[in-house]
Image 1 (cartoon, one colour):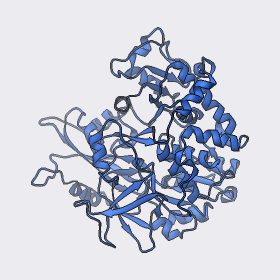
Image 2 (spheres, one colour):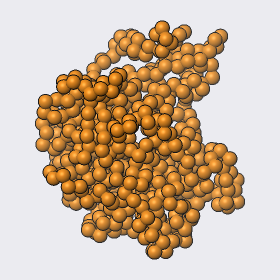
Image 3 (cartoon, one colour):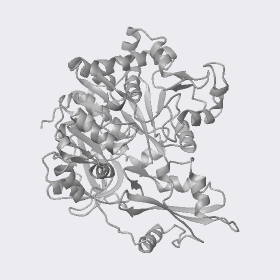
Image 4 (cartoon, helix red, strand yellow):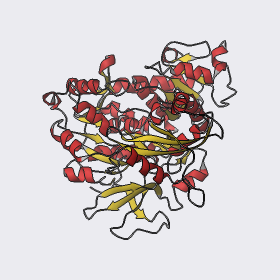
Length: 558
């Protein structure tokens, strides 16, 4: 490995797609087997260019925030690269969000254009968007304003037009387009250090914030992750993880675009059977997922190791990975070179990564070594002083991976990134003699439920809005299936009658299903320190004993 910067260092996402389309025009770029979609790199590039030209004609200016709220569909990937061509900022919105969370996301990120997915299972994306923006529903045309969201000017449906106030994806594909010269000028105006993507995270402090990732952040991470996985244009990557998350739109779509590897997307949301079929039918060489996804595939009645012989590598991340599971994935499933990644959205997302030739013990017991160009140090979280050798400390990172900051939140940015450029992750780690890092705990209280990051402060803030609730405390409890689940202890308002059923019923449809407490207790008071701080460890430890839970720890990953 040399110290020379990789070719993506000064590139933008749109320019990288153009280069890949020119280099491998006829190779598969994006495959959705269930939809019969198979686009080459030249076709994906052409579609992204047409959509970008349509956005420019529609009036979307450089730097405008374009949000997408949808399941995994081909239009999501086109949107990602259309934003890159049109100099817009892509805002990822979790499709599990409900009204409260969608409203907060639109407001926090100043979204001007929202692309809205077609209904999926019990998620009526259009209906929820209509309820928050009734002006579009009653408008006789596209000229309307939102009282609730002053910056929001456009709603675009991926399906049929809901009302005259909406545009549709089909309208844009077949409507007015900017000229080729205008499109080229827009692409040429973008710099590698410009913000390209806003992804929501609670970072190191509780409330949701918009982490701003630059073109350089994403492309450098993509290059080095692909290098560790030994990707080439011959690889075919099965991506069953969601696009709204870094796992899908950086480690999935962006990594594949940098290396020319095909993206194979089994279904709108993870389905173990569909994922196994996609690996088999498309001869995938790589598979992504959180541990629970791999368990679901290994235990699926359609699992047949003989049909997965094309697998070589992949990424397992998002939650603790037990050694027996990793052994099954590498031997029974056949992904013998699968790797573990550690990081967070604020780090674009990977900080440390194992290597394909690391031992199984290293790939499970550690989170590997830093990517090239990233510095890592361990500090005492209380004093900020460097931790002595062999002593755990808070893992801090500095380099091309560190976000540009939190959107419109300089105070939170200053708490996360110090004056010397070090990102403080909130995770406690130990450096082994072999140079690999091992995560030993979390100084923050984040819950990781099956790969979904859940922040207690956010859930507590919502629970306080439940009628007759006076106080709420939220923590994670160990769970065999998901790694951790959400537990809540609620104090009723004085004189009020409150049941667990009342609380859960209120939560339904208002917050994401994975944030609704699976273990819920109505209590008369919360244990506190003499200074008034809730002693959550007492609540958690008592629940572990009462419910006879196995409180095992393993290595948390990105």
